[in-house]
Every structure is written in C-alpha cells, then in structure tokens.
Length: 171
Image 1 (cartoon, rainbow, N blue to C red):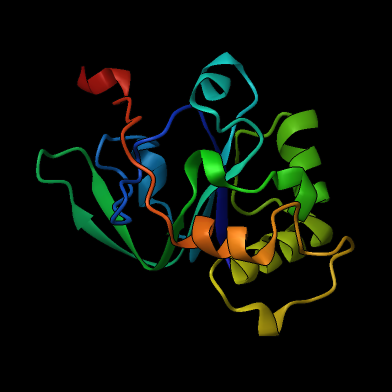
Image 2: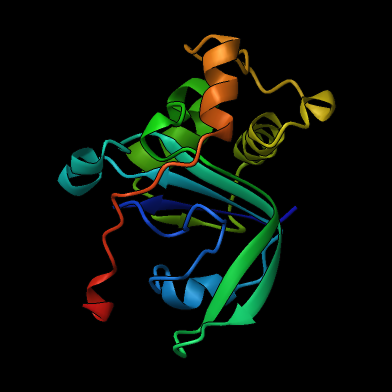
C-alpha cells in the first residue's frame, strides 16, 4: 500500500467533509499516486499554536481526484476519512518508528522510502483509526493510546472546524 505521510503546520485542509486541497495545501504532492494519507502535526511553533503538534490529525484511504474549481491542482476525496485535528492521538504513542522518522530524523513527507517497521506501523495506524482493526499486524507497542475507548470513539467521529488558516499562496 502506498501511504503518503506528511507533516502539517495548520488545520483547515482537509476540510471536515474530507476534501484535501481546498486551500491548495501540499500543492503538487496531492497529485502523486497514493492509496492512503496520514496527516501529522509538526512540532514547531505554528503547529503548537493550533494544538496539533505531534498528533495524528487526519487519515484517509482510497482517494479519488477531481480538479479544484479555482484551478489549484486537484482536490482529493477519500472513501474512508477521519479528521481529528487537535483531538488526535500522539503519533509516538501509536507508531514510535514512524514518529522517530518524522520528528527526530526530520522527514517532511514520506511516500516510498519507509522501513519495514514504519510501513507496518503506518498500515496499522490506518486500520486502527479507520475502524479496520481486525487486520492489524503486530507492530510493537499496543495500538491503544491514552484515551479511553469512549473518548476515542467520540474523537474519531467528531468534526473539528474553525481554525482554518489558508495557505499563504491564497491570501
């Protein structure tokens, strides 16, 4: 499975309906061929200001591409989508190898250069957060995180909006 994992600096793209690219974030990267996306908050001051630092902020699987109505490349929509924003689990609690790659080794975007452990964690993360935990592989630490099951269920289904900060190219 080709999974795009990337660091985010702000919220608002994708939108609560699962449209990735409405504010032209990630530009040409959205046009790449992938089967799923994992958006994670960066760890700098801007992601901290939005409360997304170090968190899994959204996941999507089975994309389809359509032209942006204003001509800003493609808008990607997902068959399965979950938006967490600042309510997302810490990446390090669900996928420590992937977190190490993104934060300690400074990856901004991953698509085809995953280690076996990182790929396994990324696939398991998608399955956990999109509700397909029956096909989980063992990837080390328990997939549970610090929230209770009830809190996780609420966070998984919640739609977080309001903190959209359009990309600078559109302002």
